[in-house]
Length: 128
Image 1: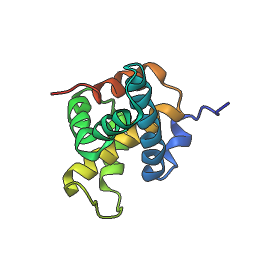
Image 2 (image 1 turned 60 degrees about the vertical axis):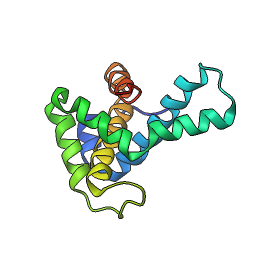
Image 3 (image 1 turned 90 degrees about the horizontal axis):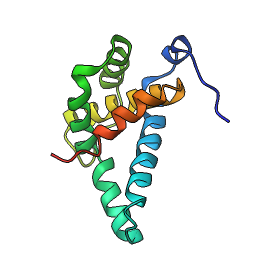
């Protein structure tokens, strides 16, 4: 069973650590949602990859930006501005927005804010 952290505890973490957790949570959410469609494994993987790439996470970040709380916005800003490695398959802007999205997801997960987490994760499954 995981420990629920306070906002104060989470503020001490490196934003890329939150993004790492958020990436895993987002990937699991997407795979669970797609699993219900009863797709063959290779199609499941290809579709999940589409939703979990930086471009889609960047779009999801843009969708939620206006609804972020002050703390969520602060976490997103810290993640976007943190120095990381150069992206391989996306623009630097997409990569930074995707990292911000993942950090918000990670924050919501480790603080146990399940309703808000689901609300934000659903945005990443909406197709334009």
